Length: 524
Image (cartoon, rainbow, N blue to C red; front, side, top):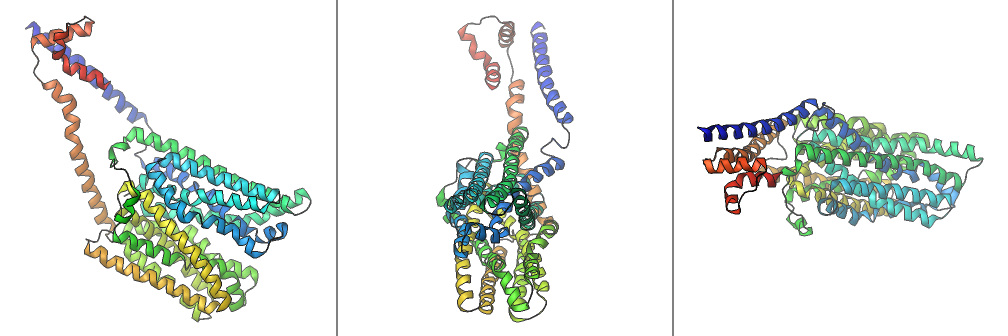
């Protein structure tokens, strides 16, 4: 009877201690407000805000040379060929560095440290670029653009990886749309404000010149500092969410290898082809579009700039709306086909008709936004999570290579054949993207149609996967504490355990009877 009472007292002490621990944990959960709880939607909105502004400085400063093209050429006594080297120094390194940026995110730095490092590259590169203008040293400006380029595209990879880590299966298309919207907002604000900044600095200094140009570019660097602050805050929030939600339990534990690239599925390579074939018909055209509208439609320079920028202006508000629509409907492949066909129609109108170009350019702006919202999230559906950084990096590397090559080809075609042949060339690029997306539709259909699922079907599959994962984890949680407590204990074991709690020294041969107590001590 005494042994039974002794056993009951010991078990009651264990119950009180374990229930106290659970009570404190649940109390902490109850005290945590929605804005601080990583599992709540409001907290994810806060994270999304910092995520969107993470790339704002990069996109704002990327087009600084275009916004100040006249001032850069005049103040530094450059020709157009030298001026274009500022963009070349940014683009060419990213053919390789963008891929390795994703590889470093996956294998070396991790998402948090990698994002901070790439943000530092962007910030330092812009400061060097501004210092080169300030000192009238063009070679230093080129160095600055090179450093800026090292971080710029890799930071975009980090931004995409953050989005998938936080929103995979939850509003992912809308998140990509919001990121694109903020990127285009940065480009639009840069185009409209940097000229005004330069004039204000020139008025304060007393005259324009390379000193004024350098000061204006240094002011623009403030946006990069702001993005660096966003990277630091994101790192803190992601680390905190990992600790609270135990996100490390959901990782695969696999280590990515460079040789994994050859194991990418056919669907992913088709997505790469669509990406290159589509975007090479957008960005080079916008770069050469101003003179096109002046020559073909007799627009004034101001009207030409306005119609040429309408693609970015439309994409800013349209991207989140279209992303929300894709989220609610699913059918990503169908939306990509729609965007590619609409873009082809816009280029055909520009090439072979004299209709008001505002119609074609507005259609181009909507289709450009729709494709970004539907295409980029599909990468997350075809590769394992531990390869996402590398997949996105490889996708942007191929895109940079295509843009660099097609930009040079477009310039050569324009010089020798004119704008009509150039538009036919762009239509051919879009046709390649259209063939690839039709092939993607049939390949995906043969494999089960995962990429083209409706939103409801995708949510059902995710719910089933989550339930299976929880069912697999549940037995392991029960066996650690419950089985040890349910194991039968002799009076001898209970007496030794009681003496050990009082601090009495036990003989060595008794230690074998205290395995459960020792196990708990090790865990603590």
